[in-house]
Structure formats: C-alpha cells, structure tokens
Length: 463
Image (cartoon, rainbow, N blue to C red; front, side, top):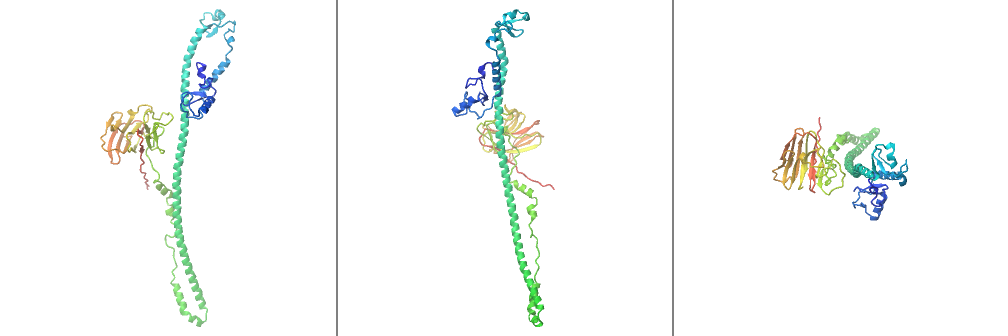
C-alpha cells in the first residue's frame, strides 16, 4: 500500500482512484474523470503532462486498483479513535510500546507480570521509528509498482503492434495471391482460347470435307441408279444410250475415295503435356527470388522497409514497441542468419550517401554498440572503408562510385568477400573462423533506399 492516501488519489478529482486506467505516459486517472476531461478538451491528452494518448480506451491499472481497494478495506476495518487508544484490559490510555511484544500497552500493563523485563518506548517515539521502517520496506514495492506500470504500457503497445502486423501481413498475402490468381486465370483463358481456335479450324476443315464427300456420294449414287435403269430398258433404248452410259460410268470410276490425313485431330499433347510444369515455367516471369529477406522486427524505428521486405531507407521515427531483437541506437536491420554453407547476395546502394553492408553476429546486443561484432564495407563522407573486429577501419582504394555491392560468405571456410558485380571488381576480403550464426546486415542514414536484388531462377530437369 502507498505511504499516504495522497499517493492513491486521482490527480483530477483528488479522491481515491475508482476504476483507474493508465496512459502511455504512465500517469493514471479514474476512467470517468479521464473521459470527462477528454470530452471537455476535445483532445485525447494526459491532464498532467499533456502527452497525446495512443489509446481511445486506455487499459486498466490493475495494480493500482488493488492497492486502492486494500487501502479502503483497511480504513473500514480500523476501530473508532476512542477504543483504539484505550487498553482493552485496563481501559487506560495506551502510552507505551512494548518492544518485545511489539504492541501498544498502558502504564498498568508495563508493571504487569506478563511484561517483566520487557523494553518499552513512548508511543510517539515508537510510532516514528516504525513508520520509518515501514516506509523503507514499502519503497521497493512502490518502485516495483512503477516498473509494472511501465511494463504494462510496453506490453499494451506490443499487443497493438501485433494486431497491426497481422493486418498488414494479411493484406500483403491476399494481394500476392490475387496477383497469382490473376496470372493463372489469364493463363487458363489463353490456353482455352488456343484450344478453341484449333477446334474451330479443324472442325471447319472436317465440315468442308464432309460436304464435298456428301456431294460425291450423291453423284455416285445417282450414276448407279441411272445406269441400273438403263440396263432394264429395251435393247434398242439401251443401245441408243449405251455410249453415254459407259462414259458416265467411266467418269465415276475415276472417283478417288478420300482418306483422313495426319493432323486432323486436336493436338492434345500440345495442350495437356506437362501443363502444370509449363505454367510454372512461365510463372517465373512474374515472380522473383530474393536471397535475403529483411526482418522488420530488427529494424531501427527510423528505418522504413518496403512491403516485400527487400529494401530499406531512412525516414521519420515510428512508434514501435520495444523488443530485444530491435536495434535501438543503430540505424540498422538484419536478414535471416547462417550457421554453415556458402551464400551470396547483391545490394543496390545507388546514390545513397551513407551506408554500411556486411554481416553481424546474431548474439550481439541490439541496444548498444555493435561495431566490435560486424564485418562490413561502408561509404560515408570519409570515403569507402572496410571494418572488422580485429583491424577496425581499412580505407579502400575505390576510384569509381559503387552502385551495387555483392556480399559472398563462405561460413565453413571462414571467408567473407565484397565485390562490385558490374565489373567483377574485388573490393575487400576477411578471413575469420566463424563460430556463431551470422546475419546479413544493412545500416543506412539516407532517405534513398538500399535494395536486396533478386537472383535469376533456373530450372533443371534431371533425366
């Protein structure tokens, strides 16, 4: 409990807190008092320090609420002043404090057998000493309450940020799948259109062929019918039409029976063969692979990351919750780390005037100086330099402006090298026996972005 009732009073109504809430500035108020203040001022700010509140519905201060309830309960349980100051055995005024029994006594109690050889102090003196003792043991609790209130604010901010992260990530996932769905829908429509076109062309050919065949069949049938009728006529009539009949039969005998040629059917293999694979190969034109993805949970509050987490630039300070992964003093951000293998990535630095690119030991404290655990190449007003824990800064003889830089890490061999990929110019190399996880590291103090470049994706079919 607080050292005095004043510690448990609302700054607005000057009464014991009722349903106390806490603001992000750590000041507490009765919920009703705070809402009334905000309604009058038409702005959500702290009535004490005028700090703007990030919450329209501040969280309850449960620790303070419990202290107020305990104080009121203790106050209600105290006996009346008259009975409190009289000895319940002798009805005499309590003037002494027995140090052995640790309780107030009267003068008669002092001489009683139960207090033989006991030590006594005047009530006022004992009360003063004991109040001081209680204040001393209460101070750590008050300090802990302050810390709990601060932690409460941090945790509330973290909970809000988690919700913001969820909504943002959900939107990005939905947008990416919308783009993929659109590609698949357009590809489906294109392939169905190609199939329909082939079907129409080959159906038209068959329709024309069937029409010609029908006409030939009708002519042949007619020739057979007429010739059969001529055979049944009289000899004179037959002989009179003999020559014409023979010519007609000979003409029809030259009729060639049409045959189905190759390629008249729909080429199903063209439309269905490795369909999913071919679509996947074509999908490479709209998707990209980036070897390093920047972790927003490590980014300094003054760094702004792109939606796809591949580029970073310096900007205005954001209101972000404190977390152990985040850089507090350095304008830096990390990618996922490596504990083995060979890895390479390109960073486009463009016209940025101040940057640092390299790798960092994952275990480094993000709230303090990190220079002793980073291997990097940087650019600033002093020019191009390399940095390592052992050699510190080393000037680099770079004559032309670097717009892209390639980082190549061979963790197993303990080798880290930097190149300018456009001209394949070697910039610097480090040899170090790495023993822990190393993370891609970018530091920038420029509003122009630094971007991790995608790599070309190839597909190989193994026989």
